[in-house]
Length: 336
Image 1: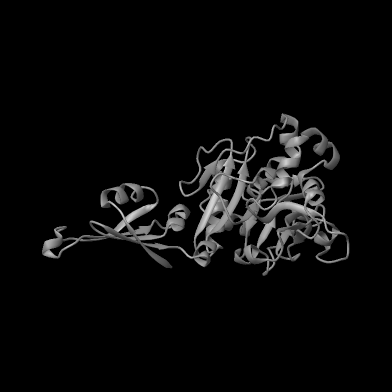
Image 2: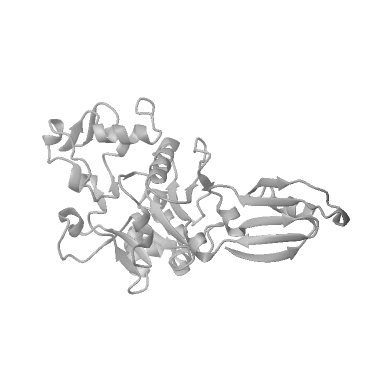
């Protein structure tokens, strides 16, 4: 922490700080009459988990004239981990966001800020920050085709967010520690959705997948800006947002996760055609951080009774590890 002195009116300092991310942690009582040699001491500490307060730091106020500010170092600021998801339309209810938040919280160390960009914040856990999805001028068709709204996270300014962020699709299941994803080398790091992913190896040309990716706020604003100049042209040229991202990022900026960090339920855990009716899906591998559910089935389908999937890739009944995951992270298999 770095300290500096600042002369200020104590009432002004209290009004400026208290209720804006700080809590009054301790008061040393006494007389403010300097002739008697007494003074008040106010210590303001950042509210736990409040990133705005962390930016401002600790405040030690010695009334009536002196305040000592302990501001967070760069290392301490970098300890805050920001995770972003998006929810639009009615396919995914708020329970998906809440379960994902609790799963992320269990698998990240240190301070976490979990953010949902959404068109409907009703039912979200109070610990989740939420903002509207930035307007990209998309047609209703393009909203539903691919994940074009994800490109909005590359805006130069995205609300009050800053630093390194992890983006997760709502149909992600968190099964292992996530800290390493923030430190993995690369400006933008995504899933490799080429045939290498299904085989967990190979030499196919990598293909970006935006179900799980890290990036830095404001580093590549041209990704958003170019799309905004020509929506229809970019959609026609690239078809889906992850091909656009790979095509428009500067050379060398894109890297990929180790193949076993993010598994596909379809490729790695689902049983072969028809066998799913008599055999349960495999559990995730020990080194897996995230299981991606792209398309059918969705995580909640494995939690509910009945047949799930699309023929011939179908399964039946509740999957114990999926049910446990849902319950452990605040979900209700009978209601959700």
